Structure formats: structure tokens, C-alpha cells
Image 1: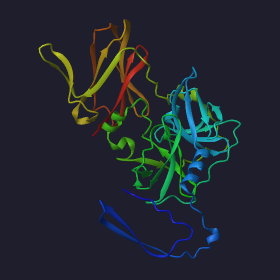
Image 2: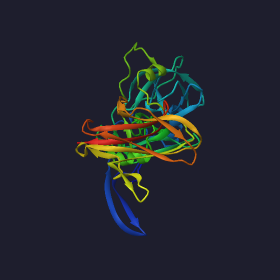
Image 3: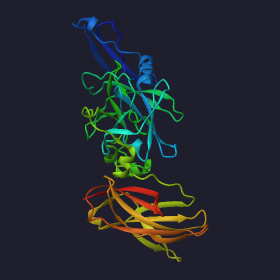
Image 4: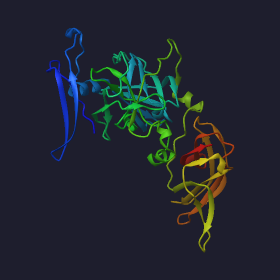
Length: 382
């Protein structure tokens, strides 16, 4: 448990004690001292009340909506203006988009297709919004320390925002600040404020593994999310150089930066990963054994095992494809003909040679015809 204690401008100096009680019985005390400051009080910054921070957050936190070619919203994230016409958000929200809507705190809707710079692995992108002339949020002159309070606006399912307060609890392996609050989903990319209303960074969720479920990420281990618990606050990446040329979302798609979104199918598809396939029971039904999401190169191979339960009559082809975490296609199976008939379930599996893969994160797509309809991720270690 933790408790953030704000000190007013005038407070009695001396020794103070915080006492913790459980069921009315003392469970511990902590003493601290408040001393008079020699700094000119007129130059001191005033800590804002939570209500003030909430209003400031509402004014500067953007809602980012990715839209496909048909105008359908694909995903939502958060962002902020870092210069009059430059928005910082997550790269993951752009996946598969043809246009981005930038919704300001006062409800204005701006649109763009231009990406100035980005980083897939670090999950950030700068968008240029032509014609915008917004006032960027003031940044903190010094990075926060362990124990400092910070605030961000968490997006709810209906699109509303609630203020989340946390204290900096540590650093992740990548240098991001770690806070107890969750920072994934549509809240990713939101500005994080200190108690003076200055920006200290942006919220960051797990790396952009398009299509990965919460269970996928959990089974891959804490390395995927960059930490074991809580959320992250990422410092601001360097602004693009003056005069940098932008690229459209379509350009990024053609360059292989995006992961193709899953296509809706009437057929139920369920997949697992294992070390082998065994035929069990009198009917000799194939089943994946030793199911998991982490494998060692010493295990020689793993198996992708998919069960199809057709929802309608359809003749198509089925294939598997393997990708690394840079979205490079590492090969797959040749398409095989599949006669999908309601009530006639069937399984397919593919053996992947592990010694050929470097340690890292990999993705497998199951394709029906030209489109992926199911995917999963797995980790390979030495």
C-alpha cells in the first residue's frame, strides 16, 4: 500500500510521524522531518490539486483513432501534441490504418495520413497534422525520481477519462519508469504529468504485438512487456529533424511495417503450440503435447496445432506463415486445399525447426486463402 502526501505552501515544521493501523492496532510508524525552505517562496512552483491536474489532462490528452480504408475504426490509443502540428502516439495503433483521427480534449476532430518518424520496437510514432496550431504541453525540467507522484488520464470503455495517480516505483530493463498503474490498451501514449502539471513522459503498454491476447503476453513472460508488474512511463523520443519528409500510412504498409490484421471468419479456429503431436485413444485423435509458448533451441522443434470447426460450406486453402518480431516473413507451408463443411472438424499442424531461429519473439499466422484468420506468438531461447 502507498499514500501520496501533498504538503501545502504553509505547514508546521518539525518532526512528523505517519502511523499505520490494522483493525485499530498499531502496525508500524514512520517519522520524517519538515524544515523551513531557504528558497524564495515567490519562485517556488505550486503543486496542483488533483482536480486541477484532471482538467489540465483533459485539455492535453488526445484520443487517437485508427481508421481502415472503409472508414471503420480499427483501434484507439492516446497521444499529445509535442509541437504545434506534431502528435506523439503509439506505433501499434497505426497498424493496418489508412487514416488517423486525432480527437482533442475539447472534441475537435483532426485527420492525417502522414507519419514523420516511428519506431516499431519502442512503439512510438510522430504524426504530422497539417493545419494544426496547438500549444504543446510544457515538459518537466528534470526527470522524476523514485517515489515521485505522477498522473495520467486512463481511457474507459465508453471513451471517457478518469485520472490515475501513481508513484514512480523503479526502472524497467529498457530504462522506462515503472509505476503500479496499468498503462496498456487505449490509455497507451497518454501524457504523464507530475504534480506541477508538467509532462514527464507518456504511458507505454506492451510492445506492439498485433493480435496477441493478454494470455499470449502473460505466457511469453515479463520480457515481452519490459517488466513484471504494473505499467511504464516512457521518456520523450527525439523530435524529427526540421524539414524531415513524412510518409503516408499506405507507404508504411507497402514497406512491411504493418502486421496484416486478422480477417473475420465464420469458422471457429483454435490453435496451440506444443513439442510434438501424438494420436490418443482408440480413435487415434491427434493432439499437441507439452503445450506452451516458450521453447529452447535445444528442443529441436515445436509444433503449431490448429483445430478448424467450419461454420459454413467453403472450399479454400489453408497455410501457415512464420514471422520474426521485425515482421519479416521467415517462410511457411504451401497452401493445401481445404473443404470446409459444417459439422466436420479437422486439425492441421506444422513443425518448426528451432535451431534455425535466433533467440527472440516469433509469430505464426494461420491463413485461410490469402488472409490470416488466427495467430499466436512464442519465444525461443538458447
